[in-house]
Image 1 (cartoon, rainbow, N blue to C red):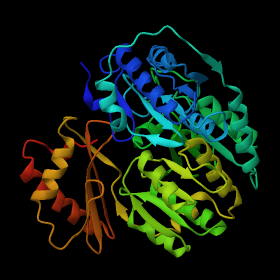
Image 2 (cartoon, helix red, strand yellow; image 1 turned 180 degrees about the horizontal axis):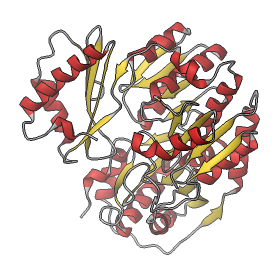
Image 3 (cartoon, rainbow, N blue to C red; image 1 turned 90 degrees about the vertical axis):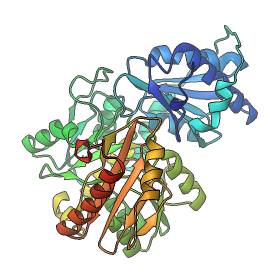
Length: 456
């Protein structure tokens, strides 16, 4: 019996031992091989993160992929950006990454690229469910790890620090650890690397830089070592978090502003950002001659919008950064961190001073509330349909974002986990409290058995 909830809006994800057993993974591999062959190609890059279930899933996936004489180009254990890099520069523009990203360690999943396009779990769901049994013993694997050095060299050629800076890296024992350390040392930074060795048990803290509790090691190390800045990566290295020289967390909104200013000085064009981002992001983009474009959350959606608009940059509140100027437009936490370090090295002021120059707003981080996976989208729709939003402007491309002239709030369903996602912002502290009160009052009426204060 297949749990259909594993097929998500921009990838496949579920409990590794329950939802992603060998037979289901093999069927997914068969369906993906058929889709790849229909493009006229016969190769696919494959990488894994460091989760404990990775090798078992890899073996079953290869069995399915090779069933139609597809050749698997094995990258080994790498961060997700290396799979994306391989599809941009290697022998085929098809790739699969076995990763649970920032989900709990018991989870795993697949991120898929076919013919240079991100593949949604929804796209293959019916084909997998309806697939008839097919046996195979064929295995056709080639070593593709030579692309790792090419990736490192290209980053180095794109980034020269204006002055030596001290950087702390915390990879949370995820797949990015050894690669981030090597790249930063190669560009000439003084590097303090924490939780570097990949370990699928994530023994020190969970690798999710969007949560403050996971940044404690980084914050302390930046302070103790008097570093210029610090970076944290998620489990598969496609997201990045940042800490300034005063050991303060730099909000993703400010990271996007920094990058927008930098790249819009080089080339004018669209900048894509997701529905969870601050209103100030669009203002910074416009002030620097860019075209702000708001989009649904999710790497799948941001990548597609970048291709559609030829945007120079895309970003999400969660820490996914997509650089499309002199790079390839995929989300890459390591490359984004290197570029941010380059930007800071070129400033005549320190990072905290630069951040203080941005407009001040009052906002919450991304808040999440645990709900049933099968009900989350219906819950958002019910809220959207039953609340009286008189006086608010509504954007409903991804959940419901309700805005006044001085504040906004958002409710959406997570596409990667069984959660509702919320965020709120006001021009003043009181405006923030007001819009949160509006949300909480309505949420309590519609869902009296759920407590908003139980959010993570």
